[in-house]
Length: 507
Ligand SMILES: Nc1ncnc2c1ncn2[C@@H]1O[C@H](COP(=O)(O)OP(=O)(O)O)[C@@H](O)[C@H]1O
Ligand SMILES: [Mg+2]
Image 1 (cartoon, rainbow, N blue to C red):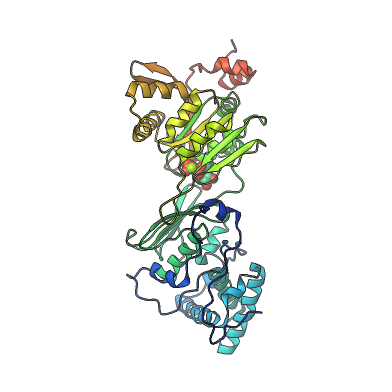
Image 2 (image 1 turned 90 degrees about the vertical axis):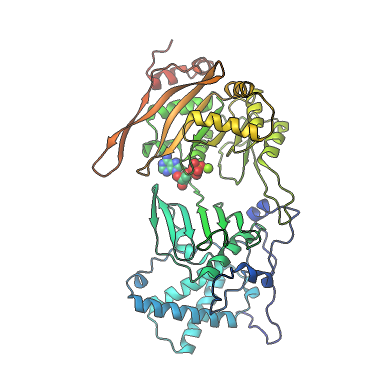
């Protein structure tokens, strides 16, 4: 049972965070204790908002984001009238406040979330009968569920977090939340009580990785315990209330087979991608945000030989390689004092001293581009990375820009020679306007012509029109060009596989 708070005790600071592997990884070792003091919590609630009439839930004693509760469709609530819903909300607030008065949250930290749920269940039933409230069974269940979500998890976001079909979750202030399902944006009816509740939840997420978000540092990246990537930007930068963006971590990563089912690729293209991965070509996967770059990179790694030593460098670990011999590295953001940052460049440089056979960089976005190219140029064939660009040509110029940003004083011809020597293949991913994701280009970097890097499309996706449902209709077409990696495919004994897919007569 809960310890009731003694009259003299006041608020006891929450217990130290439970060791959490993820949190520990992301939290700088030198960072100060991640747990923000409860008093310090106050200023994080933007002053622009009128002070909420009710006390906010006290800081979560449990650092780990609690396991998701069972999804609750709440049919009862959905069918309630606006008036009844308002009444139920009021009940929730009152019961919640009573509960906060009655329990000592620090006591909860020693219980499992299941036990906490049971305790809350008992207490809430008690409070309801003490207050003489009349609630249907369904209403009572809803109240308990919401309160548990508030205390244990991410409040109103919990029902969305348990859904596997959601790719992204976007909160634009307390009243508006969008989700992306099947490549399309949808608005939801999720609402936070107020800005303070939203901010509190954001605080809880980021403090789990030893960071904090407030007016002084209103931008923050973090990660949920399940690996989902989180970005928070708070007022005053976010004008209409805190914007919280969550890229849901998919446990079951898509495979090339799935991409085939989704018609992102054709069987022939799938075979060619497998060959490319197996014969150790250096690949750049290019695409916009959410176009499926990381997913494709993950798929491509599935066809790497199991005896190769692979080192992955990521900003936040998303890749799930199946091979046994993998070293996974992750960058580290600066700590609260702005110190201790380990950049992608640091990782890639260090990688080279780790005797890698392949280096895989989750996202190339800065001067590490140069180091990756060097690795590709110095015998680490089969290295891969993703880059944010809208077509293969742009991918090349993005890489050029990144190298320039790194302050290397290379003439642009030399830079392009580096690129054309290092990168063999650019694979372009895109999210089309009907929400479908396609591999739109398979393009080979063939060399230099004067000062220009020459590219040759091997396969392109051509849009032919639209069907009656507004879905795009198109086709993947091989251009008929014989790829210059043909000999390499032969060397690896995969020539006939390639020839069959590309409908060439093997030569
Ligand atoms: N070909 C595809 N078909 C359908 N969904 C996809 C496809 N590729 C990726 N996705 C989904 O799209 C979302 C974004 O993919 P991700 O690879 O993280 O994009 P990026 O790295 O380009 O930002 C993920 O939820 C992923 O499961
Ligand atoms: Mg990505």
